[in-house]
Length: 505
Image (cartoon, rainbow, N blue to C red; front, side, top):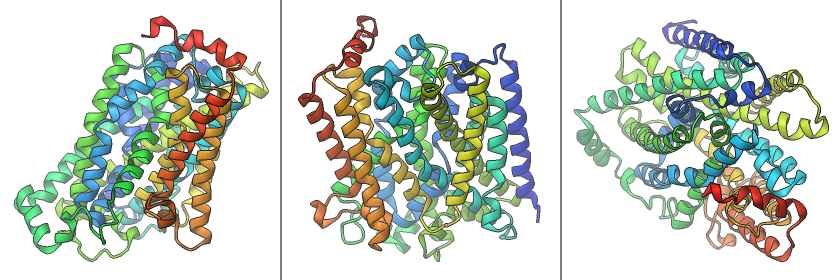
């Protein structure tokens, strides 16, 4: 049962635990600040690959290659269009997160919202982040289960595989905190980036090179090169903008950018991290999409969406020696692990610092760290339980998470760049946007249309927009409208001196 591939994964997991614990023990301080934001001590090399690893996940390796297999070059077009401006958008949105967060010693996502809009908004944010993170984390758990199942030649059941990596992830997060997580992410981020390059060239080399491979795909599967495939509805303009709102804007609002901004040791490190991340992200995701497209030649008989999520694994097994295939798939495995680290740790920090500290403001550093560790274990356990049903494709699960979170872009922008933003606008816009997304999810399930159909595909009764885009637009209208109709309170007025201080320009 424990073949070469499984032995490789076990070795990677054990090494990750050691790296995490060693990195944490190197720090002189064992305070809450050191545990949650690494004492703001991380340099740009660690930040770049830690952030890269915490985003390029099973979604990027398995989900995106599966999307390339199913949707062809349309997936490449839409994803790269969305990702190219990502670095600039992140820098614009989170420059003040770094500057003000460093001065105010923020350690959670709710901190800027709470200081700008008040206690109510600080309480709402961690709850919404947790709700949005669940489908994204379930996608990673699904990817891990599929990889263990596939790499063991189906000897290890999918359900058993779900427990494999999360056990190690919980262990080295509990032991190492943000500093340990960042160093583990860095090592694994370099590793899986290299393995994506190796697998890409191996897959293309089978048919004589990239151009020859694409020519063969065109000859055998011409629909893979049609942007308006499936009746022109697949990549309609509403669909493209819906994906943009979900992925590009949603990723800006996830926990990872906040936690890495707080952990940076310099402004230069923060800036380099943001822009280099965007460039590497475009290259790696483009390669995984093309691995999926080329996979049509290797395995043309994958009929279901769930099966297509395994094309990355199948392509590695078909083009590389067994030990090298094990390393290539281990790259995707580590990508899933590192994303679980980033999102789980961000949520644990939010719950501890934004919710618990409001209930018990005098809590000691030891109590905060202990609660953070309990939250890590609890969140992972919940996601494993939800991942038991493998029907929804990985890419769609991840996009659901991004889309729910995207509506918080309005209060975030308002906090830093609009003096007229009020707590009523922030609360109303956020709750309406998230509420509409949840209604569409339930509607899709109860009505039998499916979550994907309601959220991602254009609907006639929504003027040919998808659920994500409608929720996003309505959230923005409510945010601006409510802010203009309500007066600034004491908290908002006081916060203007900090958030719009001349030194920040």
